[in-house]
Length: 200
Image 1 (tube, helix red, strand yellow):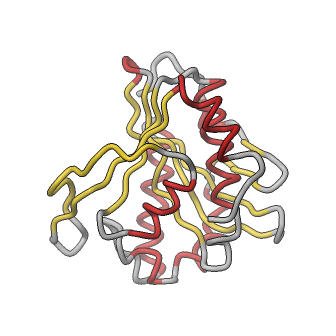
Image 2: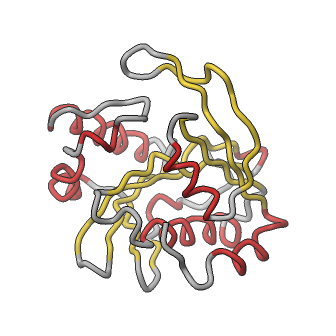
Image 3: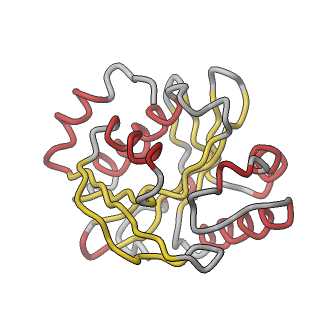
């Protein structure tokens, strides 16, 4: 729980390219067709093979939001006029002013379009300027080279590998790579990597 943070799960985050809408039940019908791309879940700890799987995943995100354990968003791409995926704040550690950005996925047309850069800029700006956090974490599978490349292009600092960190949906063990942003470095990182946006 974020005892001393704002109720940020109700705030829309928006810039010229992206609008991050707090996840609601109405978003299911927009996101479910996008989530049927099996490639999306290949290197994640969950696997969505059909609409039932995604409904369980979606409902869990709504429950986490209602309990203020995570702040999930539906990502709307203003360039195309369509929803493109989802992302979240989570892993809240209020005493240490720390949280994680993750659970991010986009449909194939959005990947490499600059939407991720625009969305991450919204999340990071909110975290450091509105929530006054000290640290934002990101993590991905050691096998997910695309995700690691994207984090590098955001200017995130690679910190290291947590071995056997997670159990995947199929029972295999995952090594996770951790990246981070910290408050003291954010102004320079924002200037260098986020203005103007670049393709990921």
